Length: 93
Length: 339
Image 1 (tube, chains in turn brown, green):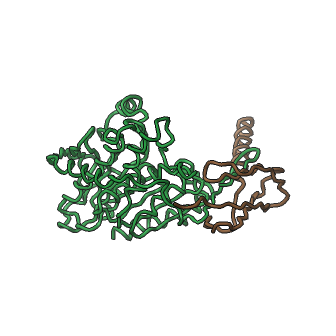
Image 2 (tube, helix red, strand yellow):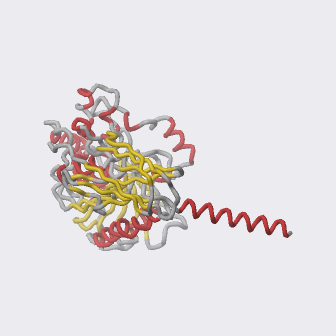
Image 3 (cartoon, chains in turn orange, brown):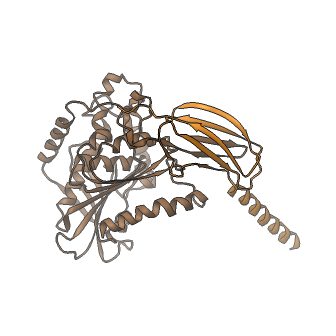
């Protein structure tokens, strides 16, 4: 009986910790919260770790849903790391 | 679009540069208007035939009537769906709501259900829940399974080399037939027709606004069928990206532009409420901005930098944010519009 209780307790603990880890995901933010910019404007992005321990993160910047314009690794040394991109739009017809 | 990948996960965020400057990737065919005028003429010449079967079960509240409706169409299939209205309403007193569905065949999201239409009938509207394919309603699972694996497999490319055979022609004609059905209902107020859909349904909603100017408002969520020729300017078109198929571009240009919301919307005065995901690779934000730019009515554009094609995962922080700042506004719009 005690063994069963211990097992159930451990199972609950494991589930709790596994869910907590799952809920702690990285978050990206940008300087304009609506995500809209003017041509030539510099865009600052922020990586929020939410207390999650990560050393490096791969960042990929894709333009026009097609073209990979940049791929880099950034070292995460604080709760809020930043990186920049400058994107432009293709000319309208 | 920026993606951050780490050991056990990924986060994405999108940005748009001058989205108001986006325009369709090509110009409409010269005979675009003439083609649709002819299609509508043929459709209207068809004798009006409606088969209606009352649906009576414990899921239909007593204050509403529900019918399984079949409306004849030019083909290849009739328009089919559930029609629900509040009983005892006065003539010319209610707005009409048309619900249209996302891509697929057998999924629960593809099928018409009385409960979908009841939701809006409870808001004092007449409502038709139209399935996209003219399928029978309320059939056993195997019926939809067989359709998906057989007749409707890859339906979005069927007939792609001829505008009169292209699958979306039938889909749009069924839309027009169903709008006509709604306008023939004595309860319709003669003013308001709201079409609501997501993805393929969003594309149908925009097409409805373009093809029938009696449509007064649409809710087009991450709409498909937008700016298919965007590839010509280095952008990506909306689902199902028919211009990227292996067929000859010259042949495709004689078919697909006739069914692209970017051209259909020209001349529409409907109010457009649209939700656009900036990390949506199925229905890219640029394709939707380009299409919606062609409409002439009021536009309420909800750009969501963190949204992919599907809404944020249930229970996530992003879902909470989306519920509060995006979904709530959609509900408010519908509520105010139907009031």
